[in-house]
Length: 558
Image (tube, rainbow, N blue to C red; front, side, top):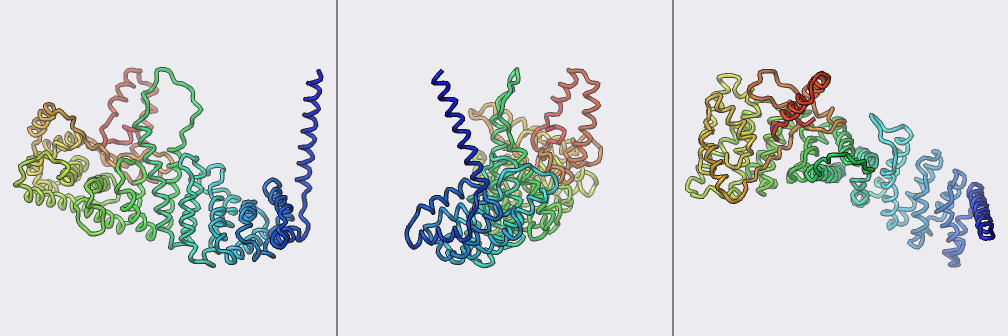
C-alpha cells in the first residue's frame, strides 16, 4: 500500500510539474534588448550562463511573433558580434519557423540573414543548408498544384535564397553542393522527394545558370529510384499459396511516378532551354545506364514536343552507336549497345518521330553494317561478340525496326523496294552471324515478317544456331532490355501514353494505336470479359497476353 501511495504521489507531482512547464512556455516573454545583452555578456564578460539558458529556450520553447521580433531585432543589432562561437545559437535561430509568420517577421528575418552572411561568410553554408532543408518537410501529396499556404512558405524561402545569391554570386556553387547533399533519401516517401524536386525546378527560374546542374542532380536520383524498382522486380519472391499481411508499404514506384510528373511538366512549361538541357543530361547520365524502365521516357517526351530536339537526339544516338563524334561516350562498347537500343526504341515507339527519320536511320545503319562486314571479311573467328558487340547491336536494331514497323515498311511497292535495298540477306548470312546473339523474340518477329514478304529467309540460319546452342557448354545469354517498352506508371503515364506507339502483330490489319488508346480499349474489353468468362477462359487469356520484351503492348503488362 505504501509503495502504491508513493507512486501515486510521484505521478501527481510529475503532472503538476509538466503543467507548470507548459504554462511557462505559453507565458514566456522576451524583454526588449534581452537577447542583445546576453550576447554582449558572452563577448565581453565570457559569461555563458544566460547564453546556455537562451539556447534551451530556443530549443524547447515555441516563440510567438512578438518574441520572434525581439529575438531577430536584437540579433540584427549585434550581427557583427555573431562570430564562429555563436554557431549553435545561429543554427537554432535559423531553425525557428519564420516562413509562415507575418510579412513583417519574414522581412525582418531576411534582413538579418543578409547582414549575417555578408558580415560573416563562414555562416553561409549553415544558413543555406537550413533554407534548403525546409523544402523536404513532411506533408500531404497534391494532385494538380500544391496548397496555396505551402506555396507561400516556399515562395518566402526562394525569395531569400535569390537575395543571398544576388548579394554574393559566388555562393551559387556552394548552393549547388548543398542541394545535392540535402537531397532526400529515395525511400523517404513521395511528398519529401516530390516537394524537393518541385522546389529545385522553381529554383532554376531565378538561377538559370544552375539549370543543368540541378537537372543532373534530379535525374541521378530518379535513375537510382528506377534501378531499385527494376532490382526489386527481378528479386521478387514467388507468390505464396496464402497471402500474408504485411505492414511494409512500397512507396518507391509512386514516388518515381510523381517525380516524373514534375519533370514532364517542367519540360512542357519551359520547352526549348530545358529540352536541350535534358538532352545533355541524358547523354551523361541515362545513356550509360542499362536496364532502367522509366526515366528515359523524359527523352521520348522531349523528342515528341520538339522536332529540333528529336533530330538532335537521334543524331547523337546514332553517332554514339556508330562510335563517331568526339566527346561522346560512344567509345565504350556497353554505351554503344545502349545507344543503339535507345535509337531503335525511339524510332519504333515515338508517335511523333516521322517515318522519314525511320527510313533515314535504317539506311544509315545498314550501310554502316555492310561497311563493317567488308572491313572484317578476312576475320575467321565469328565467336568474339565482345569485339563485334556494336555491330551485333546495330544489326539487332535493324531487325527490331523491320519487325516492329512492318506495317509502314511494307505498305507500298516503294517501301518494299527500300527494304530490299538494305540487302538484309547479307547481314543475316555473314560470318559474324548477328542472328545468333539476337533476342529470340526479335528473331522470330523479323523472320516471320521478312518471310511473309519474301525479303529474307532466316529459317536455315536459325536452325543452325539452335543446334550450335544445344551443343555448346555455356548458355547463350541475350540482351532482352528494350528501353521504351510500355510505360506503366499511372499518374505520369497520362502524359506519356498518347506519345507511344503500340506494337501490333504483323497479321493484324487494324490501324496503329497509341498506348493510351490501347490501354483504354483493353480495360473496356476486360470489364466485359470478366463478367462472362469462366475461370479456365480467364487463365487462357492471361497466358495469351504474355508477350515477349520489345514487342510488349500495354495489354500484356497490365
